[in-house]
Amino acid sequence: MDFFEAVKARHSIRAFESRPVEEDRVNRTIETVNLAPSAGDLQAYEIVVVKDSRRENELAKAAGGQGFVAEAPVCPVFLAYPERSSRKYGRRGSELYCLQDATIAASYVQLAATALGLASTWVGAFDEEAVAKVVEAPRSKRPIAILAIGYAAETPEITPRRRISEIVCSETSGAPYPFSFTDESFKRPTWEARS
Image (tube, rainbow, N blue to C red; front, side, top):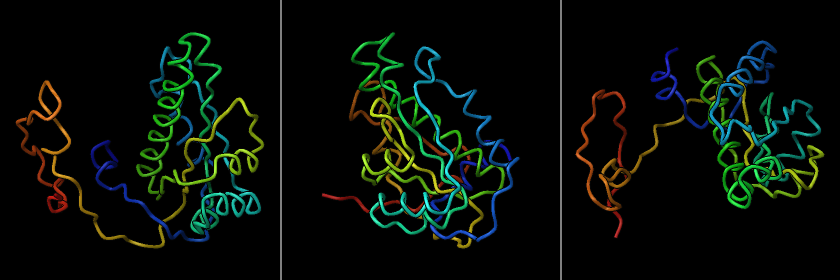
Protein backbone atom coordinates (compact mmCIF):
# COMPACT_ATOMS: atom_id res chain seq x y z
CA MET A 1 0.00 0.00 0.00
CA ASP A 2 1.45 3.38 -0.91
CA PHE A 3 1.62 6.24 1.57
CA PHE A 4 -1.47 8.10 0.37
CA GLU A 5 -3.55 4.92 0.35
CA ALA A 6 -2.40 4.18 3.93
CA VAL A 7 -3.40 7.68 5.04
CA LYS A 8 -6.87 7.27 3.48
CA ALA A 9 -7.30 3.74 4.87
CA ARG A 10 -6.40 4.62 8.48
CA HIS A 11 -9.40 4.92 10.76
CA SER A 12 -9.72 4.55 14.51
CA ILE A 13 -10.76 0.96 15.13
CA ARG A 14 -12.08 -0.03 18.55
CA ALA A 15 -13.00 -3.67 17.91
CA PHE A 16 -10.37 -6.26 17.10
CA GLU A 17 -10.37 -9.89 16.02
CA SER A 18 -8.94 -12.26 18.60
CA ARG A 19 -6.18 -13.55 16.30
CA PRO A 20 -2.66 -12.46 17.17
CA VAL A 21 -0.61 -10.13 15.00
CA GLU A 22 2.27 -11.96 13.36
CA GLU A 23 5.67 -11.08 14.81
CA ASP A 24 7.08 -10.08 11.41
CA ARG A 25 4.29 -7.48 11.07
CA VAL A 26 4.99 -6.13 14.55
CA ASN A 27 8.69 -5.91 13.71
CA ARG A 28 7.96 -4.26 10.38
CA THR A 29 6.02 -1.46 12.11
CA ILE A 30 8.87 -0.98 14.57
CA GLU A 31 11.44 -0.79 11.75
CA THR A 32 9.81 2.40 10.52
CA VAL A 33 10.53 4.17 13.81
CA ASN A 34 14.25 4.00 13.22
CA LEU A 35 13.72 6.15 10.12
CA ALA A 36 11.37 8.65 11.75
CA PRO A 37 12.63 12.20 12.17
CA SER A 38 13.49 13.41 15.66
CA ALA A 39 15.07 16.55 17.13
CA GLY A 40 18.83 16.31 16.65
CA ASP A 41 18.34 12.65 15.63
CA LEU A 42 18.30 11.89 19.36
CA GLN A 43 15.19 9.67 19.25
CA ALA A 44 14.25 10.91 22.72
CA TYR A 45 11.63 8.24 23.33
CA GLU A 46 11.22 4.59 24.19
CA ILE A 47 8.56 2.16 22.97
CA VAL A 48 7.30 -0.62 25.20
CA VAL A 49 5.50 -3.30 23.16
CA VAL A 50 2.79 -4.85 25.34
CA LYS A 51 1.21 -8.18 24.35
CA ASP A 52 0.62 -9.75 27.76
CA SER A 53 -3.12 -9.85 28.49
CA ARG A 54 -2.68 -8.96 32.16
CA ARG A 55 -0.71 -5.83 31.28
CA GLU A 56 -3.17 -4.95 28.52
CA ASN A 57 -6.05 -5.19 31.01
CA GLU A 58 -4.16 -2.84 33.32
CA LEU A 59 -3.52 -0.45 30.43
CA ALA A 60 -7.25 -0.48 29.62
CA LYS A 61 -8.02 0.41 33.24
CA ALA A 62 -5.39 3.18 33.18
CA ALA A 63 -7.07 4.46 30.00
CA GLY A 64 -10.37 5.04 31.79
CA GLY A 65 -11.82 1.63 31.05
CA GLN A 66 -11.36 1.72 27.28
CA GLY A 67 -11.86 -2.02 26.80
CA PHE A 68 -10.61 -2.15 23.22
CA VAL A 69 -7.09 -1.60 24.61
CA ALA A 70 -7.30 -4.99 26.35
CA GLU A 71 -8.86 -6.49 23.20
CA ALA A 72 -6.00 -5.46 20.89
CA PRO A 73 -3.32 -8.12 20.44
CA VAL A 74 -0.50 -5.52 20.51
CA CYS A 75 -0.27 -2.23 22.41
CA PRO A 76 2.92 -0.24 21.94
CA VAL A 77 3.29 2.41 24.63
CA PHE A 78 5.31 5.46 23.62
CA LEU A 79 7.36 7.11 26.34
CA ALA A 80 9.00 10.51 25.99
CA TYR A 81 12.54 10.64 27.36
CA PRO A 82 12.98 14.29 28.45
CA GLU A 83 16.47 13.87 29.90
CA ARG A 84 17.86 12.57 26.59
CA SER A 85 16.57 15.63 24.75
CA SER A 86 17.45 18.17 27.45
CA ARG A 87 21.15 17.27 27.31
CA LYS A 88 21.32 18.97 23.92
CA TYR A 89 18.34 21.32 23.93
CA GLY A 90 17.77 22.21 27.58
CA ARG A 91 14.26 23.08 28.72
CA ARG A 92 12.81 23.21 25.19
CA GLY A 93 14.07 19.67 24.60
CA SER A 94 12.61 18.31 27.83
CA GLU A 95 9.26 20.11 27.53
CA LEU A 96 8.62 19.86 23.79
CA TYR A 97 11.08 18.06 21.52
CA CYS A 98 10.90 14.71 23.30
CA LEU A 99 7.06 14.86 23.12
CA GLN A 100 7.24 15.61 19.41
CA ASP A 101 9.73 12.78 18.89
CA ALA A 102 7.50 10.25 20.66
CA THR A 103 4.38 11.31 18.77
CA ILE A 104 6.16 11.25 15.41
CA ALA A 105 7.32 7.70 16.22
CA ALA A 106 3.76 6.71 17.13
CA SER A 107 2.45 8.19 13.86
CA TYR A 108 4.98 6.18 11.86
CA VAL A 109 4.00 2.96 13.64
CA GLN A 110 0.29 3.68 13.14
CA LEU A 111 0.65 4.33 9.41
CA ALA A 112 2.96 1.33 8.97
CA ALA A 113 0.38 -0.87 10.71
CA THR A 114 -2.28 0.40 8.31
CA ALA A 115 -0.03 -0.27 5.31
CA LEU A 116 0.34 -3.87 6.55
CA GLY A 117 -3.42 -4.39 6.74
CA LEU A 118 -3.65 -3.87 10.48
CA ALA A 119 -6.03 -1.57 12.33
CA SER A 120 -5.32 0.74 15.24
CA THR A 121 -6.51 3.45 17.55
CA TRP A 122 -4.41 6.17 19.12
CA VAL A 123 -5.09 6.39 22.84
CA GLY A 124 -4.13 9.61 24.57
CA ALA A 125 -6.68 9.63 27.39
CA PHE A 126 -5.03 7.80 30.27
CA ASP A 127 -3.58 8.19 33.74
CA GLU A 128 0.14 8.72 33.08
CA GLU A 129 1.26 7.37 36.45
CA ALA A 130 -0.85 4.23 36.07
CA VAL A 131 0.49 3.57 32.55
CA ALA A 132 4.06 4.14 33.73
CA LYS A 133 3.47 1.60 36.50
CA VAL A 134 2.06 -1.01 34.08
CA VAL A 135 5.11 -0.80 31.79
CA GLU A 136 7.51 -0.27 34.72
CA ALA A 137 8.78 3.01 33.28
CA PRO A 138 11.12 5.02 35.48
CA ARG A 139 10.08 8.54 36.51
CA SER A 140 12.53 9.87 33.90
CA LYS A 141 10.25 8.65 31.08
CA ARG A 142 6.73 9.95 30.43
CA PRO A 143 3.90 7.98 28.73
CA ILE A 144 2.65 9.98 25.74
CA ALA A 145 0.53 7.58 23.67
CA ILE A 146 -0.74 4.03 23.49
CA LEU A 147 -1.58 2.41 20.16
CA ALA A 148 -4.08 -0.44 20.20
CA ILE A 149 -3.17 -2.57 17.15
CA GLY A 150 -4.73 -5.69 15.65
CA TYR A 151 -6.98 -6.97 12.88
CA ALA A 152 -10.18 -4.95 12.52
CA ALA A 153 -13.45 -6.51 13.65
CA GLU A 154 -15.45 -3.44 12.57
CA THR A 155 -15.72 -0.96 9.75
CA PRO A 156 -16.38 2.45 11.23
CA GLU A 157 -18.29 5.22 9.51
CA ILE A 158 -16.22 8.00 8.01
CA THR A 159 -16.09 10.82 10.53
CA PRO A 160 -16.48 14.50 9.62
CA ARG A 161 -13.47 16.77 9.54
CA ARG A 162 -12.91 20.49 9.81
CA ARG A 163 -12.76 22.34 6.53
CA ILE A 164 -9.21 22.70 5.23
CA SER A 165 -9.79 26.48 5.20
CA GLU A 166 -10.19 26.33 9.00
CA ILE A 167 -6.90 24.50 9.48
CA VAL A 168 -4.43 25.79 6.89
CA CYS A 169 -3.44 29.43 6.62
CA SER A 170 -1.28 31.36 4.18
CA GLU A 171 1.72 33.20 5.65
CA THR A 172 -0.07 34.34 8.83
CA SER A 173 -2.56 32.84 11.25
CA GLY A 174 -6.12 33.32 10.06
CA ALA A 175 -5.20 34.24 6.46
CA PRO A 176 -7.00 31.82 4.10
CA TYR A 177 -4.81 29.42 2.13
CA PRO A 178 -5.85 28.99 -1.52
CA PHE A 179 -6.57 25.26 -1.38
CA SER A 180 -8.26 22.80 -3.67
CA PHE A 181 -8.13 19.00 -3.55
CA THR A 182 -5.82 17.37 -6.07
CA ASP A 183 -7.36 13.99 -5.24
CA GLU A 184 -11.09 14.04 -4.62
CA SER A 185 -10.88 10.74 -2.70
CA PHE A 186 -9.35 12.68 0.21
CA LYS A 187 -12.52 14.71 0.70
CA ARG A 188 -14.45 13.93 3.86
CA PRO A 189 -17.73 15.22 5.23
CA THR A 190 -17.14 18.42 7.16
CA TRP A 191 -18.40 19.66 10.48
CA GLU A 192 -20.97 22.38 10.27
CA ALA A 193 -19.58 25.79 11.13
CA ARG A 194 -19.71 26.44 14.84
CA SER A 195 -20.33 29.84 16.32
